[in-house]
Amino acid sequence: MQITEILERCKQNDRRAQMQLYNKYSEGMYYVAFRFLKNSFEAEEAMQEGFVKAFTKMHQYNGEVTFGAWLKRIVINKSIDMLKAKKTRVGRDQRAGFRYGR
Image 1 (cartoon, helix red, strand yellow):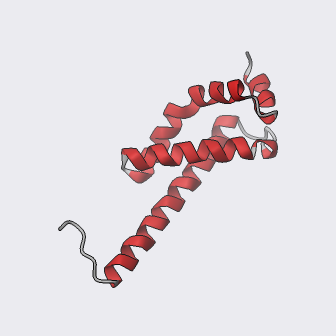
Image 2 (spheres, one colour):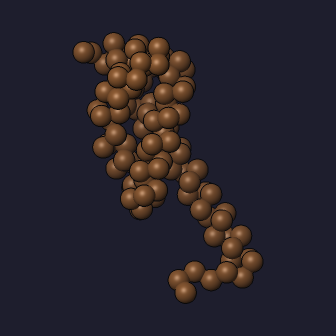
Image 3 (tube, helix red, strand yellow):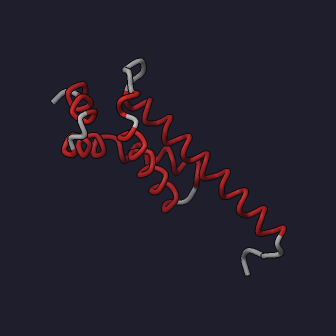
């Protein structure tokens, strides 16, 4: 099955088509997230959330770039959001007097 056909089926919420896309792109998207987050669990979370967002926003994909590039941008943005949230959380905890590593 061609990628364009899979994408069209995904736009119709076809779970099998979504699984095909996931199987095709998940490993690469995991490594994209891991390069940012340096943590396996967080990279898995960013990748999963990226796919969820991509599937819910599939109607916005217009084919101007490849699907892989579009998905990669979503995963990168999610990874950056997670880094910002972590930085904010650590800063807040340090101001409250918590110490890490003890």
